[in-house]
Amino acid sequence: MNLTYLRLEAVRLFRNKRVVIFSTLLPALLVLIIGGVSVGNDPDARKYVMVSMALFGAMSAALSSGGTIAVERGLGWNRTLRLTPLSPGAYVLNKVVLALFVAVPPVVVTFIIGAAALHVRLTAAEWLLCFAGAWLSSLPFAALGVVLGYIAKPDSVQQVGALINLVLAAFGGLWVPVDLMPRVLREIARFTPSYWTGEVARSPLDGGHVDGQAVLVLLGWTVVLGLVALRRFRVDTARA
Image 1 (cartoon, helix red, strand yellow):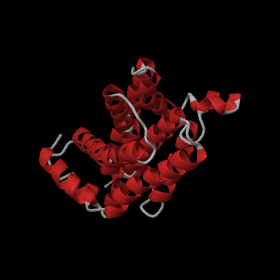
Image 2 (cartoon, rainbow, N blue to C red):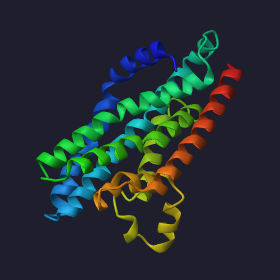
Image 3 (cartoon, one colour):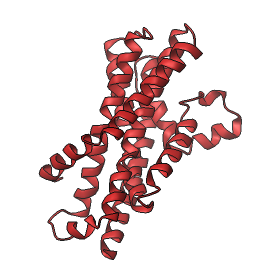
Image 4 (cartoon, rainbow, N blue to C red):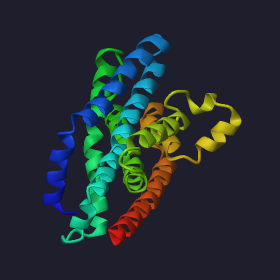
């Protein structure tokens, strides 16, 4: 990982206020609307909604990395990268780390609103584990964002990313708990990374522990999508 390149990219990324504001404000508004109106005074339901919306914000932010990559491709930035010592692996790793950086604000803001406005009360361990789960569960989506950036065109990547995010959020139980879905949809959900992200992020609410199986599945998704992203980067730079 190239720290100089990472620092420059981080500064450029956080200057894109549209990405940061959208990925932070949307889940914050949703947790107020859904958690404050739809679920009533059920404390368990409010906890579920808060963590789910934090996860949705982290997923959205991580996937947004694909937009910058698609723009860079359109500008011919990959041709410039071929002249630098930056390796394909370091480039993909930098992009994934950057996506993790931008996934922090949505989780923090959503948790603050959940505690202040919805009066969600968790133990210190549960807050910490839910934060780590919601944040680090965005890893496979960060890798997916890199893949998307090398597949989609600059003028369509945001729309494609938003559609993928909404579909995966639905199967991850962010809008409706997976247990309440029809049996066919429940089976389909288990084959998506978003289902397992929900299991990791919300499992601390069921006794303060983390689902080990879900963590392993997410790591598998991250590795597979990371390898696909690396392959797409090499193919794209070879054509440049």
